[in-house]
Structures are given as structure tokens and as C-alpha cells.
Amino acid sequence: MSIITYIDYYVPEGELFINELLQQISSEELPAPFDNKKKYKNYVQNILKIDSIRIEKEKSIDEMVFNLIDKALDNKVFTPEEINLIIIAQDDNSWTNPDIGHLIQKKYKMLRAHPIKISGNQCINIELAWLYSKYFQTSNKAIRNVLIISATRKPDIQNRILSSYSINGDGAGIILIRNESENGIEILDHAIVCSGLINKREGERTINTIPHCNYLYNCINELVKRRGVNSNNINKVIIQNANPMLAEQCLCANGFKKEHIFDENLGKYGHLDQLDFLVNLHDCLEKYEGNMNNQILTVGFGYSGTYLSMLLEKK
Image (cartoon, rainbow, N blue to C red; front, side, top):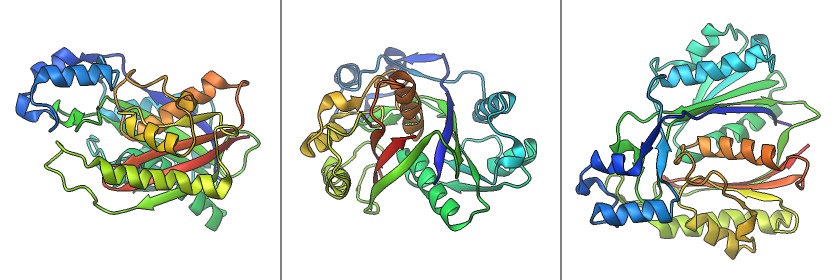
């Protein structure tokens, strides 16, 4: 069944304010729509709702993850022997050890676990890792418990600016997926569209929003038609903590209302790449526990051209 039974994340307390960020880049490094820093700053603060992003100043990307695993083991969330599959879900490769999955397997004596990596889908790597976990668990009954691990820590300021979509912060997260559980979150249905490298970009400065809008709309619409998903039977819609306009337009065009979007973390940490899904799902469940319908819709995409909507249910 592939049920999420545990989510935890770490976002550092360190902040990089927008004025500080702008002092460290040139005007030529701004996203293409902006010809000066003042215009970009106004956009970041008024549209992206960002005054600062969270950055890790001390811990390595490895240490952020190790601390989360240590915490889960200390709290007896799982035992090392239970884990059958370790999935590293991210494109960021700034690990101290490039074979991080094998390092985790050895460090924590997860001797029954096979480490793999899922990447190439940018901001929806974690959702796809969960989806692939479901495939693995359905086809192989020996894969009972899956540990999804993800983190991001940008090495320099320039890599933090993702066109006009957002500014990246740092963080780490883990998810435990069990194939059998009476409580947790499961996938009822999903719709995925992969269009390949649709964006002809100049480095990271431009993103073509028209194809993104078309494919994201179609991805949501497929679930609307197939499952009858609408504002009346969905409690919240989880989107990425970045420029919300594209997701809002596609959702509204499919009959959803803006007030259904979980936006409490928009601008809070910056865009945490693939971790946005994990962080928002955790916080949405925590905030609305006991006061929500069972179903949640998630909407996300990776800029290379992978779009995913999922219908989730809380057991």
C-alpha cells in the first residue's frame, strides 16, 4: 500500500536577508525579466513573499541528514533491520561522500537495505521516490519499509536564484514508508506528465512559463476528470514554496479556490527544492489534524518537464 508513517525535517535557523544576497551578486546575474536590483527586490518581497532565506552555516549536508536519522532511531520510529530500501531523492550532489546511500547503510547497519538514487526531476524528486516506492512494494513483497532521504545545501549565492521562480534555502528531510500500517498517508491516485527538456533556457536565467502552464493544467485536469476531485472533497492543496501564480492559475482553471492552497510556508524558508513537498505535507497534517477531510491534493513540477499531481488520503 506504500503508506507514509513518519515525516521529519530540519531547516536551519541561519538567515540570509535579501539585501545581503543582492550585495553578493551583480545585476547581470539577476533573472532575465529584471534589469536592476531594485525591481528584483520588490518582486521577491511582494510576489515571492521572501524577506530572507534559511541557510546552514555550520553543518554539512551529510550531518543534517545524520541528525534526522539519529533522532528517528532514538525515538524508536524504526530499527535499522527493518529498512529494505534507502532512496536518496535529489539532484543536489554536494554530499561529503558521493556514495551517501551506501554510507548510511554502513553507518547505521541497515544491512538488509538496498541504496538507490532518484534524480533528474528537480523539485518533485521526493514525490516520485514515494511513487516508485509504491511500485517496488507492490511488485516485491520483501520491500516492506522504505526510507526516503533528501537534503539541499547550496554552495554559493548564484546557485540559490532559480530564475524568477524563487530563491533556494537549505534543509534536510526523511520519510518512512511502510507497506502495511493502520495509520498514515497513502496515494489514492496520481497523474504524471513528462515532456522532456521543454525549456530552451539561457543558463538558469529564463524559464518558459507557457509550456509549464499547459502541462501542469493537464496534469491536474486528469485527476479532476478521473477521480471527481474538486474543492468540496479536498481539504488542502499542497504546492511548492515558490512563485505561486502558475499553480494558482492552473488550480483555479480546474475549479479550485485559492483558499484551499496550503501557503503557510510560502516565503518562510525560501524554496527548499524537492523538500517543499515533505515540509508542507508535514506541517499541513500537523496544523489541521483533527479538523480536516481525509483527502489532500498535491501539485508540483520539475523545471525540465516533469509534472505530477497526487490524490492522498489520511488513514
